[in-house]
Figure 1 (tube, rainbow, N blue to C red):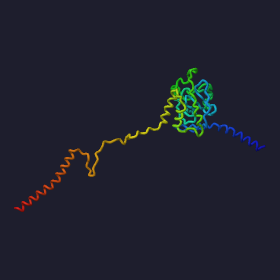
Figure 2 (figure 1 turned 120 degrees about the horizontal axis):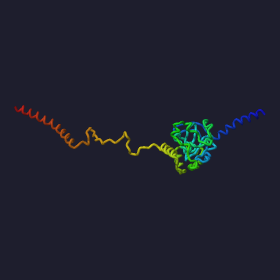
Figure 3 (figure 1 turned 30 degrees about the horizontal axis):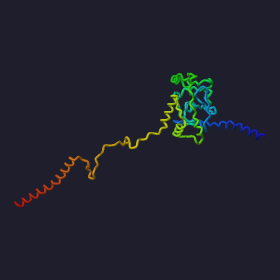
Figure 4 (figure 1 turned 90 degrees about the horizontal axis):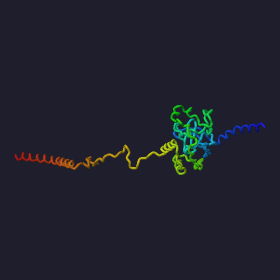
Length: 272
């Protein structure tokens, strides 16, 4: 009986660990593309927040949302965004988070931070208290809107369900290609459009130089005259060439004249 009791105690200790392993969430931040450790084995179940153009993931122990064609995660006092459900994630500054993401009520945060305690569950977090007066001034009016005029939610990227486990695309270029092929929705929120543009610039390959275009250090130089084996220019002006040839001829004639003069003087001496 004692052994059986020990077995039951061991099983009771292991059960919470087994339940926690079904949703694998770990923390490991790396920049510029943050790996926040939300390792999802498959596309998560998403449920719309009533009255908001936002979805949340009730089955995850993470603050995981979908808004206007992008996934949003609040982890360790930072917001992250990605166009795919399992990243890679890009960090988003508090002043650039879309207002409808900021307006998500507290009750839909599946892993709320400690400072959320005491806040109304049906109201958005008190971001002004958390991020300070400067942020509140920059984002003035973020918590005031006509609830009857909320925009419709963006369609869910259901095509990503078929990319799970080893099939999940890890390269940003591959993700972008699949999204353009399967997801026609264009973001309407100005902040989300800005994120899209920034990610498009980051994903674009570095511009290569055009073929045949000289480099800055290899700019074309003016054509230089070629040299013949004797070191003289082959493309010298004609007048200069004639002058030099005349000088050479004069130089060759001078010794002959001197020799003829000496012979004449010798002849005169003999005759005298």
